[in-house]
Every structure is written in C-alpha cells, then in structure tokens.
Length: 380
Image 1: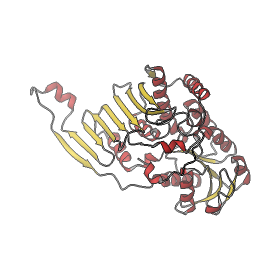
Image 2: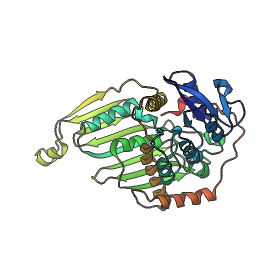
Image 3: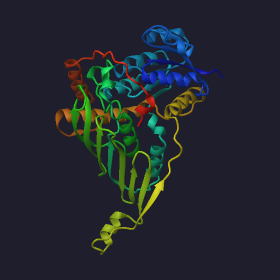
Image 4: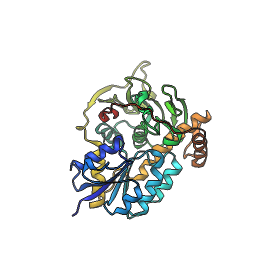
C-alpha cells in the first residue's frame, strides 16, 4: 500500500515540529508530501515542494491529507476548503475560536474524509491511567474535583514576536483556548461537561495582551459533582495538580505521580453508621505508576494515518474537540457577564460577545526580536 502523503499547512513552531516528525520517517505508512507556508522555499529543508496558498497545495495532487497548523482564526476557512476537496484533515487544537464555528466545521466533513484534532494529551500516560481508574469505579461516585493548572507560564516575548497570539482577532482568547484547551479536554473526558459555570478572569493581568491570562472557575454538574479550575500563564514555576474525590477514596496527580487514597468502605455509609464522633474510614495509600511516557504528537499522527490506511477508529475525531471549546467559551462568557452561564452554551450569544471584542481590538505588530525557541519546554 502506498504511503499516506500528508501536507503541512503552516510552518510556525508546531508546524515545523510536525514536518520534522513526518520527514524523519517515524510515522510508519506516512510521508511528508508538501508544505504550505509564507515565503518561498520553505519546503526545501524537508525535501518537498512549498506552496504559497492552501488552495494551491490542494490543487497540486501531491497530498492525500493535511495537517493544519496555522493561527486559530484561519482554521475554519482552511478546514472547510480541505474537506470540500475530499482530503483527510488533522487540525491542530483548537478546531476554532468559538463553539459555533467549530460545530459548523465538524458538520462540513463527509463520510469519505477522516477528520481529527490534535488533542494529544489523551495519550498522556498519567491521564490515560486516571481515566481507567475512574471508569473502573475505583473512586466510587465522584463528589468533588479541583484542578490547579498554573504551569502554563509564558513570558512577554511569547506574545511580542507574534502577530496573532494573545489577541481576540487572531486567537479568540488566550490561556483557555490555547494552553488550557488540553486540560479542559482531559477534564471533560474524565468527568463530562458541567450543567453550569461561574468564572472570574484576569485580562492582561500579567502580560500586555487583551485576552485572559488568569482564570478561576467553579463548575456544577447535574449529578451533584462540583469542581474548581484555577489557571494562569503568569505564575512560575506554577502547579499542575488534579484532585478527584469520590465516595471510595481520593486520587491526586501532581504532574508527575499518581496517588490513590482508597477508603476501606463507602464514606457515605461510614458517615451514616459510625458512633465514633471523630472517626474516619480506614484509608490506604496506593502509589500508581503510569505507563512509560509516549510521544503524544506521534501517537495522534500514527492513529490518523492508520485510520486512513486501515480504517482504524480515530482516537481524537474532530467532534471530540467540541466539548473543550464549549467549556472554554462558557468560562469566558461568564467572566464577561459576571454571572453564571448554563450549558449547553448559547452559541449565538457567545459569538456575538466574541465578535464585539474582535471588532474593538486588532492584531499585533510583531516586535523585531529573536526569540529562543525550545518546543520541548512548551509542553506541560
């Protein structure tokens, strides 16, 4: 069987990384077919042709699929065009700036095209193990969670050298739609979507940007589960700590280790029956060793290729990218309004609020700075 020819659209930081991964031959059954990027000769380092526009790339016949790694604002336009060309599509996160735009994009896909989104932390060994523990009932009925995700520190230069980062027109948000979209995807993967959200946010609290760089949110669920999310891109070193509390115990992930504090009995039943005024169920600590880390981007790409070539089910189909966008949008809308927001989110109300902010701001004139870029340090 011929190799799946993948074109990379956008050769920024993450696009170049994907091109290098494909060009290295580490994705069995796939090859880099061509690239699309501003400036001539951008494909030369990878030994492939470069096209100035995505339409020219589509018309070339050199690719069977595309990986779209352009600024968020362009995702819907390029994604729809690729799907209309009957190409298979892997979209860098997020699918779009808003839930309304993302839903329209997902609806544009035909049954002929494989359409996936780069939600690579589904392959994070710790989150995969936590998912298994929850699905296996190790914590019993969930009561509460708290996720502190303040490890997404970004210095000013991250924004200054970019035209679109940290702007409403270019990104449709900041911390939530860019960095924390991974956490929000994992969160809803683990516990589902809440019935309502209340959030407060700092807009440009730590950086000279218009969008959010700090958020604290309370989430309520139909079954009684409650939770909090605290996020920041202005704290160092920051924390990545997830606590999940259930009737049969508590699980804590500190970014490196998983610890399960298992109760010998139902906490609710102990609470009801015990005559020991200061008693507590017997608790046993169990360190949980996650599997060895994997190259998450490589895992998503390999699954995408196998879905095309062998009809393997997509691990991250585009529709799975909707929930995290809806949650991020709901937090922003709540922060803008200063009130509780219910889910499912009113997509039209959010779109109107977002477009007002886009109309009142602009993209940035990039600073003439030479930033030092080590992509390995960008992952949390």
